[in-house]
Structure formats: C-alpha cells, structure tokens
Length: 571
Image 1 (tube, rainbow, N blue to C red):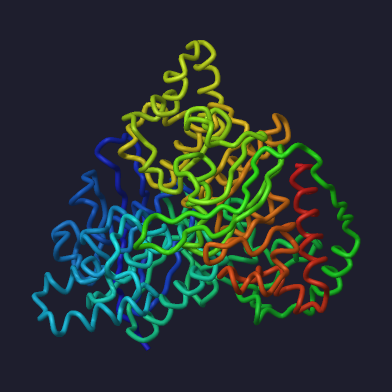
Image 2: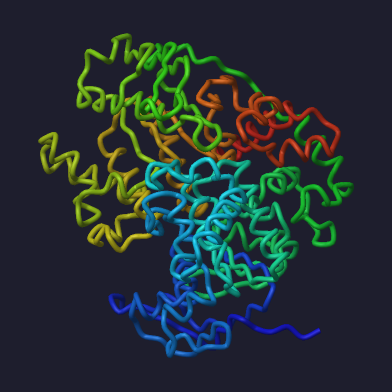
C-alpha cells in the first residue's frame, strides 16, 4: 500500500546568516504519513536545525542561505509562512518556558481554542479532558512558571493536543521528566499517534526511554548530515551509536560487556521481547565473576539535615515534610524522585536561598541560620535546573568570569582557571558567543562551568544532564568525578537520569510526596520495588534483564556498576 509523504527534503542544505559553514548538508529525507520517527545525534549535529526547517522557524525566524527543497504537507516551506505551517505542524519545545502564553495552566492549554473562537461551553470540557490526559487536572489555576520542570513539559504537551495538525514535533520531550512520567509521555505520544495516524517526529537523547514504545525509524545525524536511516533493531546491532557518541540502552551494554555480538533477528530494541537465549550463559558467567567490594565513607559530615519541613505558603501543601539525612565529605549522592516531590526545593533550602519552617540544617557542624547566603555559597555551589534563571551576562566567557570578578580574584589566576573550565565543558571554541543564541543544553553547560570555576566544597547540580548528548554528558560527568576524587569535592545530583545514578554515584536519597522514603546504596534503591513505585521511578532495564535471566537483580546491578566503573577507569 502506497503512503503519502508529509515531510520531504531533497538535496537540502542550510547555512545560518551569522555563520560561514553550512549547518545542514545535502539532506535527502522522506517521512510518511502516520510514521513515528526518532531524530538522533550528538549536540550540534543539526537535529534542532532540521526541526526548525519542518515547523517554519527556518527561514522565517532564523534567516540563512537555503539550497534544495523542503516540503511539509505538500507545501514548499520557503514560499509558505509560520502561520500556515503551524496548521500542519504542532511543536513541543525543549524549553517549556519559551512556549507559555497563558497566565494559568488552564489559560495556556486553552490558547489555541481561543484563537479558533471556540465557545466557552465547548472549550472548558476540552481543556479539562486534555489536562486529565497529561495528569495536570489539579493544576489548572497554577501559574505555569511556578511549576516543576516536568509539570511544565506536560502543560506544553497539552497545549498542542487540540490542534488538528498532521505532524507532531517533539524537541526533547523527556528532558525534564521523572522516569515514570517519561514512560507515560512516550505512551501518550504513542497513543495519540496510533489513534489519530498523525506523523510524529521525536528529537531526544534518551534513546532507551524513547524505545519504551515502538518507533518505525531512527534517523541518525552527525555533522549536519544523515549518516543512517534505518530500523531500531538494525541500528542497535551496529557500532554507529558508540562511534557517534550516543548512549545505547543499559541492558545492551551489559550484554556487550560479556563479549556478546548482538544480532538483529533477536529484536534488541525491546527488552521484554528480545531473544536472550544466545547470550544467557555468557552474561551470567561474566557478571558472576565481577568483584563488588563495598566501602564505607568515614569522612566528617559536611551537611546535616534534621527533621526539616517547608511550605511555600498557606495555599500550598508542604514541599518538604520532616526530612532528615546526612551528607559526608567526598560523597557522590543522587537525589531522586518524582516531579514535584521536593528535590529542587531541598536544594534551594540547603543553599540558604530559602530557610526551613521547622527543623535544622548544619554545614560543617554550624547551624546555617547563623550564616549569610554569601557565606553558604563559598561552601556550596548550586547549578539550577533552568539555566535561564542563572544567566546574567551577554557572552559566555563573561558569564563564567562573573564569580571571579565579584570575588576580586586576580585576573592571571582567573584567566587560567576559566580557560581550563571552558575547555573541559566543551565551550572554549564558543567563549565569545552571545548567550542568547545558545541552545538549552549549551546554556546548561555554561551554568555548570560558572559554578565549577569557583571550586566550592559541595556542588549541587539540578538535572545536569538534561539536554546533553552522551559525549558532553560523559565529559562533564568525568570532570565532576575527577573533582570528587582529586579535590574531595562533595557532589549532589538532583536527577531523573537513572543511568547517571548507576554510573556516577554510590548512594541515593529518594523523595516522594515531600518525604524521604529511601537512603541507601544505588543498587539497593533500584532493586527495591516499593521505593520504585512510591517515587514514580521505573525499574531499570538491568533489573528487567536480570529477572529474565533468572538471576538476583540486586547482585546483578551491583556487578554491572562495578564492571562499568572498572572499564571507565581502565580507559
């Protein structure tokens, strides 16, 4: 049966007006009606530029030089308009804040319906129905900007549900979502696509999470070109993902560790359906022999949180309720839990931005109520989840230099340190770029670099890997790991990324419904079904793999963590 093409690129190239080199080079791509396609590739490969060509931002908002043709829903984009293209393409942006137009969640969801002059009697049930779909029915009166990152993403998703568009374009829809909500988002996208036969294009770094539901094709990009256009099973068997700096699913990494060659016919894109028989014996024998020594941190306590509670006001429920834990020097700790559980609130509280209504916080044994925010921040550095809330200077180097300027650090010391940090975070070549032209992920790197430059004793990073490809992720995390091991800096990661917790932390503190429900080693937390369920996490694919192989999940996850770290240390 013939299919109708809805997106067609033919010999298409594009160069931004402000750049000398082409960002997209000789793109030939056809996407058909009803397909679900994943656009994959490292940062800077041209994914977002390609998406901007589909929804009309190029050439109407971002001018440049175009050769070749791009047709969307049969219309040549260069002779169309953003308004006309928006009737065919609905876009959910990575940066949700940039998409909000309403003063409340309800108003924002209703915006498209208001533009269509829909009667209020018909509009209100539509808004409530869509809010229920994305689990935001209890937040219709909230101000969008005060929501958590994951809640904002859900509102953005709801805002395009009404439109009778042919194409749904998702720019990193999972970046700010907790694991369970990430799964639900993928399920929701899949449900919409299957029921409406809309064409879905997903741009995302979290390959394993996207593969929670079937995709028809994966388009792999590198250096402005399409290097592969194939099925998920075929791509996962190749070496292209590793070569292009893309993280493969954890369960496949575990199988490869056991020196197994993965075959396409075994359906490796689905952990539940994959044929494991050819790999079973090798995997069991390999991980059975991994030594998993356990070491206890005997260092002094640097942060002590005792029975802390906090609420933002009488109209809000408690954001934190009787939370207690200790952080020791040189630890690497993951703070995990569902969206809205209180993780970011806890980070602000530790940094002194807000102070507890009840309970006590000590830093190096001193009640921090006796300390100013400036004094606290010489010890604890905080990288916020939303980079737009931290950036104040116009250029990258000036932003990273700001802390040195404010603290009157001699220029010769500052310059050397700034260069080191910018190179480590892959920003040196961009040091003179305006901050305003950066992508969300690039802005994230700038904020991380700004805090790291000051060498605090403790660094709290709120979703440090959101918007980062695996190469940049690995460089940043390796650098943070070096800071921890070489300089003894204590690091706290607020994260939805279970891969990060597995690879780079030893301990996890779990929040759910404003309470601390777990505090243990990562492999024990991720093997505890009760905690997984309460905290809206999801079982890792390692847990699923272990169960399917008939081996103890806790022991298997612990062995994988140790084997992975051994491998990283050797390399």
